[in-house]
Length: 106
Image (cartoon, rainbow, N blue to C red; front, side, top):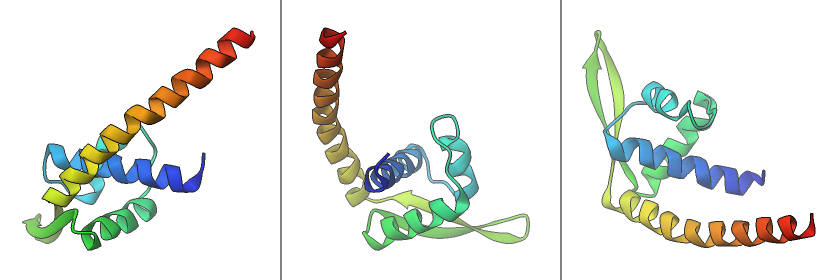
């Protein structure tokens, strides 16, 4: 899969996970696990990019004597997800066309 496409899809998955509820790194990985494999070394740069783009905000909560960093989606992140959903309809239309052509060739 094209690396830029995969990166974009992972970003949307992270935003969607956080949109459901504020979350922290390990929980986001667990939430995405049924759909995609993502490591901490992949997740944290995504979270930083989304924070820099004003899609997420960060706050800390003490958990077992340590501070845990939580992420909350911001309006820009919600807008980015909505835009992705609209664009994905076009991607699926192209995919359906490709599949139709392949089935007709068989």
